[in-house]
Image (cartoon, rainbow, N blue to C red; front, side, top):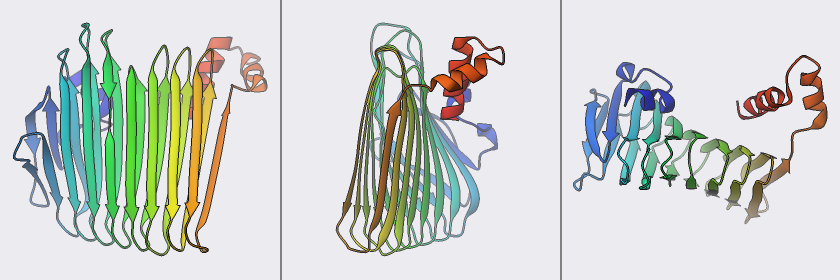
Length: 299
């Protein structure tokens, strides 16, 4: 378990203010304090996390580990963030599957941010072993007045199939920032959907997706941002494509108010030859140069 945790958690879990470790469908370890409470849902299919108002700089880790082949784990986690609270939530799932049966994790996370609260949410997915590994994360976010949610999602490697859905509803002066980093290879499949409603005046959303598709993999990116009032949004999708991979990008912006300011960009292409040439003149091989460019792109 420890090796998988190292891949999906970027801090020492014992030092977190609170945590809940789920392994093969069950909670195996938990920590909480007077400011952050973790409560099991009645059907044991997830947890409710309550962050007390005015809590500052709390760190919450909620990793999921699957080490047995053939498990399909579905978990519902709800986060209730009190007014003026400021916390970091580190999630993610690691699957180790060396057998022929499919292992799958479907995580449904719902965020309820109270007035002027702030959350940084980091989610990583990682798979290892020759068995089939599927991840289907769903994130729903409800941002009240003046709240801020920063989402960082990373698909590291080893994910055979994934459908990633993020939905958000923003009220007055709320801010949503999403940064997605995605890598696919072999025959892997990845689909991302972002659906954001800017409902309150001066609400804003910033969505950035950077991905690399190699070999015979397929990626599809769709964003649908709706400005229902005076609001701002910027959506950017950049992808590097190699070999026989395929990438489809569909950025959609929909202004329902004359004061909505919505921007979208999309770019798909191969690594520039001049970049490769420059690095190779410094002594790198072609493969080394490509690796360095890709790592820098996804950094």
